[in-house]
Length: 256
Image (tube, rainbow, N blue to C red; front, side, top):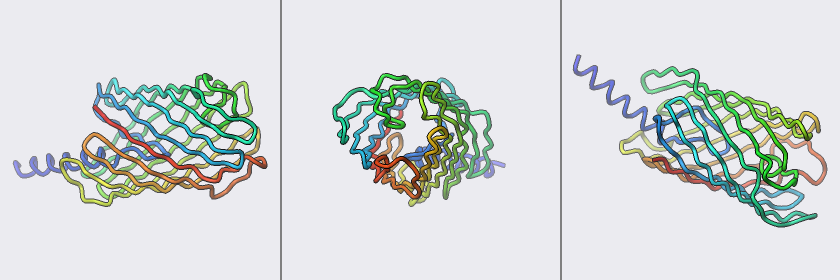
C-alpha cells in the first residue's frame, strides 16, 4: 500500500512538472492552468512583415488566476509600424481576457482539459486595419480551447468566432498545436519544447482566408519560459498587397 502511494506521488510530481515545463504554446493557447491566486507576467513580441510593410508589436500581459480553473488578464501593447502609406508608433488595442475551465480529467501521466475563453478588444489603437493588433474597433472573441497532455507530447485545439459589430473583420478562427518535449521529465523543472502550430482564419465578410504555420522552440524552467517562433503562410486568399510574408515571435513569461 505504501509503495502504491509513493508511486502515485512520484507520478503526480512528474506530471505537474511536465505541465509546467511544457508551458503554453507560442502562437496558440491551451487550457492548462496553474494553482489559484497566482500571477503571470509575460510578453509575446511579434514582428509582422507583409506586402504593406512591417509592424513591431510588443504587449505587456498580466494574468491572474483567482482559482485553479479561472483566469482574467489584461494585455497593454505598444505598436510601431512602417507601411507604404503611413508610419508611426502608438498604443495598440488593449485586450481583456477571461477563461473558465469547465472540464478536467486527470490520469496517471496525462490530462485532458477544456476551457471557455473570451477576448475583448478595446479600441484604444489607431484604425490601421492591422488584424489582431490595431484596428481601432471593438471586437469580442468567444471560443473553446481543449488540450491533451502527456509526459511525451501535448495537443491543443481552439475554435472560436471574433465578432466586430462596426467593421468587416468578423472572423471564424481555428487553431491546432502540437508540443514535443525534448528532455525527460525532471524535478526541478527544466525542459526544451518544440511546437508545431497551425492557424486557420476566415474573415467572413471580406471572404479572406489564411492558413498559417508556426515552428517554435521554447525553454521552460521552474517558473519562467523563453519562446522563439517563425510563422509562415501556407494558404492565402486576401486582397492584393495584404499578403503575409512572415511573422517572428519572441516571448517570455514569469509566474509567481
